Image (cartoon, rainbow, N blue to C red; front, side):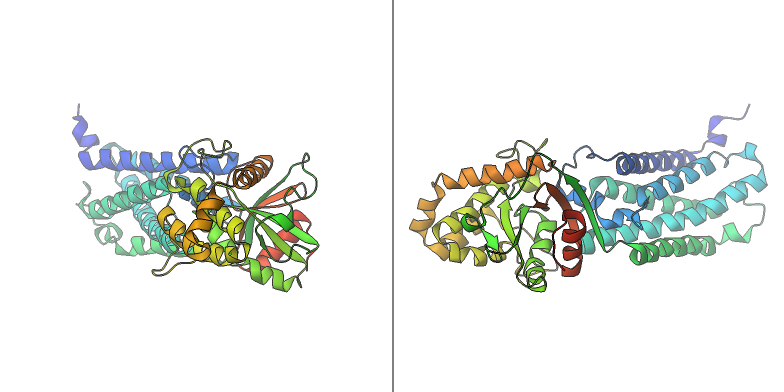
Length: 391
């Protein structure tokens, strides 16, 4: 009987283990996409959740990319089972050829999705990054090992030179990227209805606002000062109001994604550790000097350098608040009982709207978690998902 190492040498065992691990990650993310809910450790609003619920998590808003990845890694795993000497040379060659093409697709896709997370989404998903790293290691091992296979005495130019099949796989990854760009929905959103809510819960004449308190349509905006998607949405508000002809306004409702003050958050995420304090600082600015609040709010979501936005620290926010309204007025406003009452009102709206991610737009009993790319997208979401009568 032939020893085990002949059928399962070290490289074959590593190939099988890596493909099984990558398949497990991809299958779990694919199941999450189809079943809904939160991935373990990726609660609503976390960077991981922002990646998994972005428009780039699917092709055309229909096919989850994790499902495509799961199929690819499963194909590699199956091919690994036909690399042993008992499979016969024709079957081994076919398995190697398929694996080289799939290796190129895996490597190209991994690079594409890392670029997406870094420069387009602005957040990283640890599950995704673990899958990409595993895939890159798997692809490197396949490309390195193919010319050294045990059937080397049988001439096969496609395996002796792995570049052409690998390039074919890279072309398939490029096709996936082009398809995502071409078919990505202009506005991805998750919406729902809260029948127990009717009308506006926030008095626009007694709350921070973007737009006029007398606008016929006032939409409640739930956000967190440490949330990247909230930052992107904030800079669309003024243009949306302008295009509506002043018929639209947004009541700003800070909604920290931290259990420190928000009981609807199932697990704390380190990125939102100071969210409650930042919300209170912002509300203290509005309480001390309402006319200074717009400048403070814009400053919180602006960035001074670099290619991506970074949330303000609690120390920097407190210093900016004191500079805008005066240290004495800021300190006095921080103890005003209106601040915790208003904050709890915002958190209650968040709970009524199902919790999970922010930003959320609420109008009457309807709510939506939007991902607009521009003001036109935002107006379309308001009209189609919230039935806001705006053009």
